[in-house]
Image (cartoon, rainbow, N blue to C red; front, side):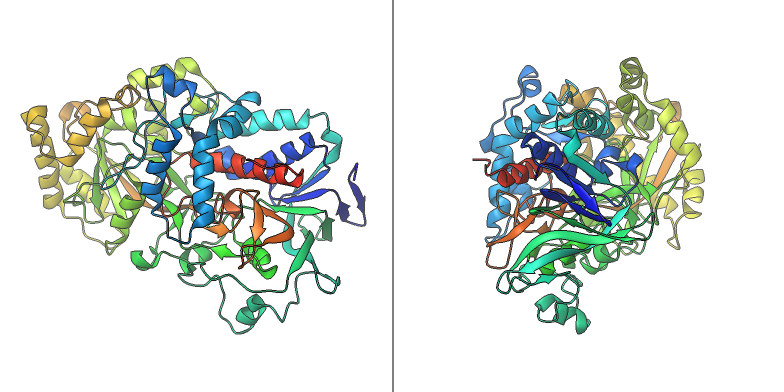
Length: 588
């Protein structure tokens, strides 16, 4: 089909892409390169084209880049895969996730780094080192590359080239269109169906009985049996006009995100069993339209949906000062020199919690407490040096590519950011003494009494170790800080063994932090061509899934935990795989 046609709210093109985030955009770009006509169906407004990736910090994990080599960092796919497997803890039946993980570490340069570089996306020269691990290895060396301009810059660079593509006339983007079902054709009879009345499918039987296959603690290892079908398009409502629409194509690519947004009901229903009940206060750091609707639609075609209880949450979320959705949250990059305290103001232990080590472990420890929220206790000096936000709107020097301001913030501290948060956030208290800080924390304690004497004792014990000097450090956090500061990229953004109750570093600051829902690590199972697989692991004709919808690859490329920076990278990787497959090519 050379061009896109539209009659009576019915679109026809070679390929229909559901979702306008990074994965959907990259898929469209690659398909235009292959001279295919494309319709992107996106539920959001045009100004939000790019989805959650546009609001991200823009860090991506790469293996053996020029930036690493220039810093003297020796990396390899073998080392990266070992680290990946250590955090993932794959099950024996996670065959496709393991294949995708191997593909990522082996092809991150030519399939992701080089592709982005051709779109004028550049990365800061200092490679960062998050997720190092606590009890088992994480990243053995720095791999986290921050895009200059954050995720906003990544999306803007790609969209600029997309809109100037030689085949731009073969692309139509429909904003504010909600897809509610897939259009399918049964392979045996050839009869067309709208995907709404499948009484004979396992999914429909479970829904009629009130037992949702996406219910509580569903591990996703059992697929949903259904008649073999061919996917021919999608249908839904134009939310601007209220009119129904259909989009038909030879292939349909699902790029609609995960289940960690929306009203958070699917997050709670699929909460990881070993963590107990989900926190009463759970913040939303995902996209408001990441509601799992297309996962259910895919299941109706017979798709295998896996590992919905594997979710990636952040431990240091605060209520968003300017919310755009219910329970909207901001994810802090927790200062490594801050003390992480439980809801009573007592330091976690015996192993202290600390950012940049193992996010999943930190979330797990907080969820084991009765209150299931925590406090970060620090001071002004630590805050301006180490506090950051995992997003573009607050990291203005990065987003707007202000080099002089960035250098100033590194040398003198980001005072503007801290002042803004202190002014806008209801989760931050500021005080001139531990006693006063405890009183203010009590006013935000949600029914949990602050142990002011215990907190003062924990702070004093930590500060006393610093006074005794580095050779006598017997505190795991201080030993880790010493190790972190041996790395140049970390040393520039960390205090040098800063005490908490230091008169010269006041005021004291306490930040009430909540678990913040972010990413679905599970999703629709796919092969290395991004084709959606059924319970027999056979491709469903005409249906592909990319990005978070596919669990970032294979229905769960990360296993239990991410090495960070792999989310954006997987969106590019799986999108390119899908487009190449549609064009009759493959990654290998």
